[in-house]
Length: 429
Image (cartoon, rainbow, N blue to C red; front, side, top):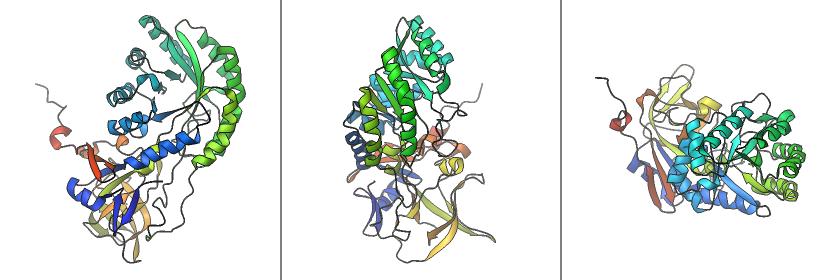
């Protein structure tokens, strides 16, 4: 699953000691494993080998250009949701011609940029958007490649903030009107209908919602292939990862050795490939979290211990501005010390950050090994929706990012300085 393990009593990423790395670069610090990202990409590609399958990495999960460059080198396409992400992909050496552009609120400038860069396809989320794309394409005297995003009204049974495939969500076009929407779109002079897209949500740990959605949509795909000659069917992303007990159980540690059970590639491909193969269409996948989530950790240092009447707080130097998932999604991340615990002593504590918000926490009422000021903790499974959602709230500079390649640690983003924090601001004269 990943390349983090205790070696000689110290947590390592591949062959790099994280205690030493954090001493050199400071904390908070994001660290990513190149081997983990490549392993996940290659296993997914191998699992879908019987199909004409394009893996378009969901750039929003982690958009550092070093990560994008790594995946571009593997031949990946990219699922983008903004003009800025398209710019990043191209800067990283990715091919705009392998980009699908999703999102409910594309602007004129973004649509113009995507058309000029000749992206593979827009995934349009409403007929109003289709009309707007047609207008802009006409102005530029080009044909806009387009798929409609279908909302299949399938419950992915995930957190309400990352569910996207139900009729009350803002994404996609309702199943009941999708055929008519295709007919109207295909009739527009500057639209080239190219495929169908759907995505039902993120962090799915069962294959059943994927199967349910694909089975529901297959007859529609067959009709669109016959009536409009579509060339691809995108089934979106959403493959979940393990957030609990996510360090290999072989690294004798203080936590429960029973591992979480992620949705395996074997189960995913075993159920979906037989359904999709008879279509004879290109199949597009849009994984994000699956490729990078378990490939990253956020390292933070314990600053203080505060013992109150009701709680014991371990106050660390990372905050919700660095990793917002626990506050935003109630996301649970495993927290482990960089130095392997040598005793079975544990304590129930809250691990909280320095930001002036009660929601600034990483763990509440969590049983953890004894931690003292100066000890460092790794917040596991932070490679997806970590740094990309970070902010400068409380005027806190962005942390550094490191990409580990075996025994080499590459700085892929230096720590932001105070000068850089305010460099684009000015007092009016």
